[in-house]
Length: 115
Image (cartoon, rainbow, N blue to C red; front, top):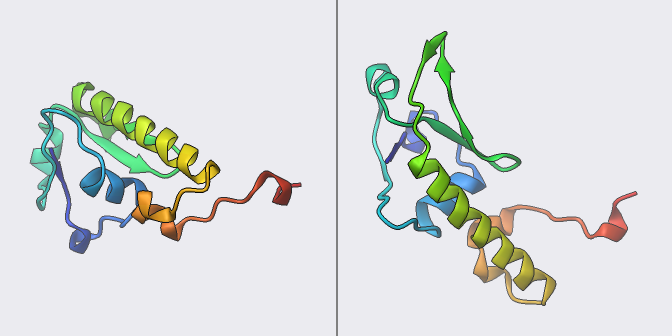
């Protein structure tokens, strides 16, 4: 699986960072590569990562249908969800932030702070 390098204009999101470094799905290797429009259009799967939506499939770009597969995205979603559950559980139990280094930049408000 390929993702554009940050230098190409790709956003340095927390979800992307975790998938690139902390999370590993069996049989899926992830690397950075500058992608051409033709490579994206012919890809088996295309998805974006999002802090609020995790991995979101892309079905078309500029009116052209793109990769309809879901094997890699589904596998990564499963391991990412397990990673988040573990991290949240550790935080609730008082574990150190080092369990999820990329999340150190995130702020999670305690329920009492939300009105």
